[in-house]
Every structure is written in structure tokens, then in C-alpha cells.
Length: 345
Image 1: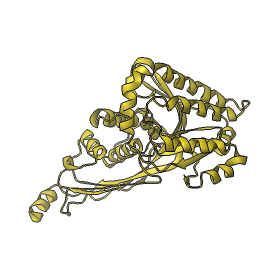
Image 2: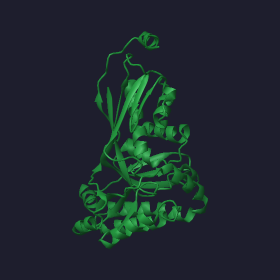
Image 3: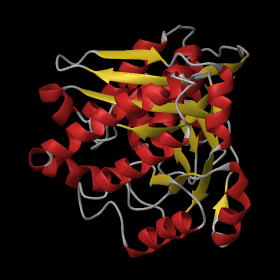
Image 4: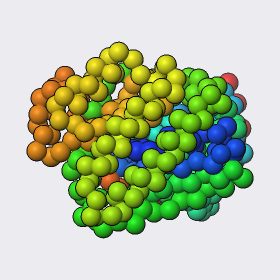
């Protein structure tokens, strides 16, 4: 029995420069942090006494006679990538909804890979785990996803992540006093817009428009430098971070027409009118969670103004994907699998 815990993330600046179509030509950077909201994956070898070969539980329940018949694309691809043909049982639960802009899909993939490696009694370092998840999502599943979410989930913490033109990935932990990070936390508020979206659909449009958005993406990458500088220097007013978020959102919303809509714009403007200095829609856009930067003394005013939306308290976290339960179980003779198939047939 293996249980892994993998953190979700908040991306502040640089989103869009982490797509391979961009950084292989221009390089890219993001500034992001993981938070204390996680997804949990439980996996084990399925004992050979059930009518089905494998059982997968997420928002659906799948009982299949072969791993190749699994409908969940990430589960099927991870098992294929690790050449696991034996019967498995996999359960997924999470602290927050999927398709909400917090990197839940990649956290799922990272956590599942880590669990499957542990199931095979193998270790995997953070960098290799992130690269494996990127390969599964971008190459095997061929989803239009970026590269930052897998890295954040594997490493954890408040980081600047650089993407080099040769495909190399560099993770630099932000060097700042703990008091400075706590100050930033106190100025952030997370609201769920209630609009679910599929990131890959919006990302496909953004990737298609990338050649026409060079100046915008260069500006978004520059905001990573500015945001890092504000947090790293306690002498600079923390309010500058909120102003940068506002500038970043103004740029991001021009990348494609699918990133925002009238309802989201209304929520953002309501937040500004209630005292927020800036904010952004997290993830690819189209819905999910909206982050606001608001002075602590106006936090209640913002809450009252957005009373119809769900406010989710959170804190920064420092730990990446890790195994929380590791309990080896009895290993059954493989002949029992053949016997099971005959009996149930």
C-alpha cells in the first residue's frame, strides 16, 4: 500500500513562457509557489481474487480486464510508461476541485508516478520525476500543457523556474526572509469563480497564437524578474507585488480571447473596487481560481464584495511530492491471476 501527497501550486508570473513552443526558441521563466492544498494517490498491487484485473477510482470508477483498457489517459499512460501490466488498484482524492488553475492534473501525474515507482521499490529524484511527468503529459498523452506544473509539484516550495532553449530546466529556490513570505501570504486571497475549464483547449489556442504574441510574452517573462526582486528585498513595499500582478493580468488577458470572459472580468473589477491592488486568474484561463492581492485591513471588505464566491484559505508549502505511507503487502504467485481468469470465465 502506497500513499503519496503532492502539492498544488499558485503561479504568479511568467505563465505562457513555459510552453515548449516558446522556450525552445526564446527561453522562459516562471515565479510560483506550492500551497498546503494537495492531491493524494493511493496505489497497490490488486490481489488476484477480483473479477476485474485493475480498479481505478477518481471522479469515476473503472474496473477493467486489462490496463490498456483504462479510460483515464494519465493513468493509462503512466502504467504504459513504466511497463506495468500487473493488476493495480489506484484511488485519487484532492483538497480542491480539478480544472481550477492550480496544476491539479500535473500534480496527479507526478503523484501517481511517484507511487508507482514506490510500488516497484524504486526511488526517483525530484528532477527525474518532473521530467517523467512532462514526458507522460506532453509526449504520451500529447496534451497542450506547459512545463511548470510538473516541476512545481515534484520540487515544492517558492521557486523561480527557468526553461532553457536546449530543454534544460533550472529550479532556483527563492531566497527571502520567512517574515517576507508571511507578509506576502497575508496579502493574498484565493476565490473560486465556479467556472470549470479544460486547460488544454485554451492552451492550444495560446500556443497557436504564440508567434503573434512575442512582445507580450517577453513582458510576462520580465515580470518574473520584477516579482522576484520585490520579494527578495524586504526594503521594497510589498504593495509593488500587487501592482505587478495587475500588470501581468492585463497582459495575460490579451494572449487569446478564451482566457477571460464578461463574468470573470466582472469578478476582477469587483475585487479592485473592494480594495485589491491586483490579481489574476490562475492557470490557463477560462475559469477556476482567481487570486487577489489585497491589504489585510481591506480583506473583510473584499470578502463582503465577493460574498457569492467561495474563499479558500491557504498557506505556502515547501515540500514537493512525497510518499506518506509505504507498507509492503503480500506478494501473490502469478499463477493465481491465470486461475482467477479461468474461474470467473
